[in-house]
Image (cartoon, rainbow, N blue to C red; front, side, top):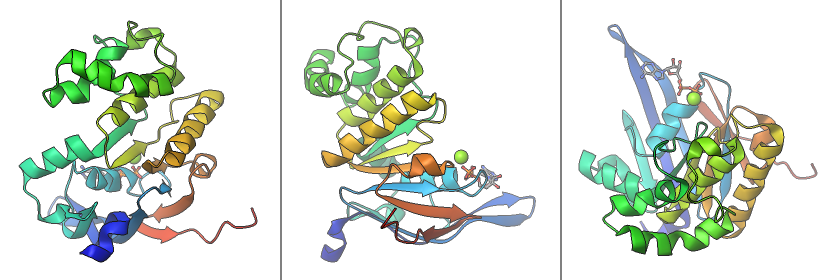
Length: 234
Ligand SMILES: Nc1ncnc2c1ncn2[C@@H]1O[C@H](COP(=O)(O)OP(=O)(O)O)[C@@H](O)[C@H]1O
Ligand SMILES: [Mg+2]
């Protein structure tokens, strides 16, 4: 498996369908997808094309019916439920359109949560998170509740929370979908900065202008994946 180590994500011939009555309706069809370490890739496709289904598989929240999935060299398709939970908690930093912050927690409590869940004390977790908090410009907002923040700030909190667990990949589903265009651009710029720092990012979107922030675009249409033609000269 040594040759696979340059890939953070290596997906071979994944199929996934849902039962509709007696019949299985295919949603992902022989999907092959590779992401190298340190890449920033966008998966672009219209509503209903299978983006969320694919994200759930990449994020170890669901399993494919057939095919192989290696994450950082580990055979996800061979894992039991408990191992999948472990990989999901340690290796995937999720960023959602609607932020998914805990409303009763303040910003600091939201950000340190992944470390506290792993058994770290709040004090130790806070110390470990301070660099990330500063990087995202959130150090003056730590005692605020999510409801007191703008959409762009809330998304920065959710990105901080995704980062503190030091995941293998950041996995973002329509991360700018609920934001005005200025805040959306700021989030995309931040992704560019995180990518330049070495983070591997997979971003799912239906919006070509959002996808263009990534280094590479992969199209999904009707459950089939295809690489975009070279964008050189653009
Ligand atoms: N749990 C489910 N049960 C049955 N059909 C589903 C389920 N989830 C998604 N689908 C169907 O799979 C297709 C792709 O859905 P989805 O992955 O959510 O697409 P996207 O995120 O690109 O909008 C759609 O036709 C949808 O209706
Ligand atoms: Mg979706």
